[in-house]
Length: 142
Length: 135
Image 1 (cartoon, chains in turn orange, purple):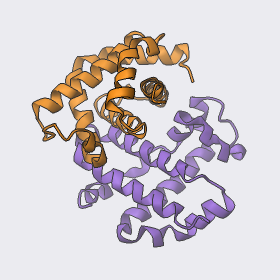
Image 2 (tube, rainbow over the protein chains, first blue to last red):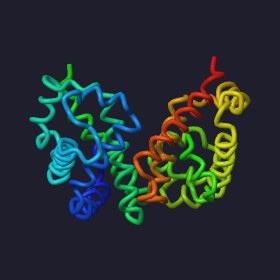
Image 3 (cartoon, one colour):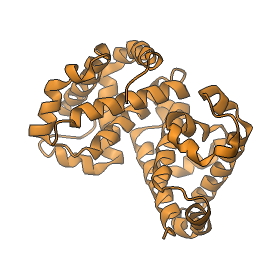
């Protein structure tokens, strides 16, 4: 699965807007993830996951920053996320099913904050892009 | 589940089943006789798709009225989707998540993480109910 020129253009242009609220989006995405899919909290026993927690905010920022790195290197996502890919494969070992859940919650957050931009084409492009990101992050698992 | 009460009062008619066919094009496999599905705009304007979307929404409305017995409410539809329509239940999950995203788009800030969580439970329940009679 690879992104078409049009899809890349949509993502890059929307990222311009999204990045202005990056930290808030990261935090909100994680809040949504932990509330809708509580089993994902099992990966964070060492975190304070209450709304407004500094750890939640910091981690949300990290996640969105990584998505941003993928956008900035949209022609070479595997290269941009190589280190994160190894981290997830050898250290974090988050079950692959969870990448879909996180992607979904990110889409919900973006849809809620940028409704006019979130057309069907934009939705399709983002869903595909996050699929590619998820694939890259799990490609070294075995 | 009390949060869902809010949603009952909203007019669901703007929700689009059509988006499923755009975002997950392989779902078009069930709609060969729907005519032109060749592009996003063709899909969004296709009258058969819109009509089917209305049917789906009506069913979801029934689900909201019968939240305590989803399996009973969807028993007949479950048999239909298995025996006649041959729809992989994975598609119910796709539609459920796509519905959640459309709700987020239309309700924006109101679609808080808590409201989303209630809806995720709802669509999960509907998916399970629709798959319940599969054999």
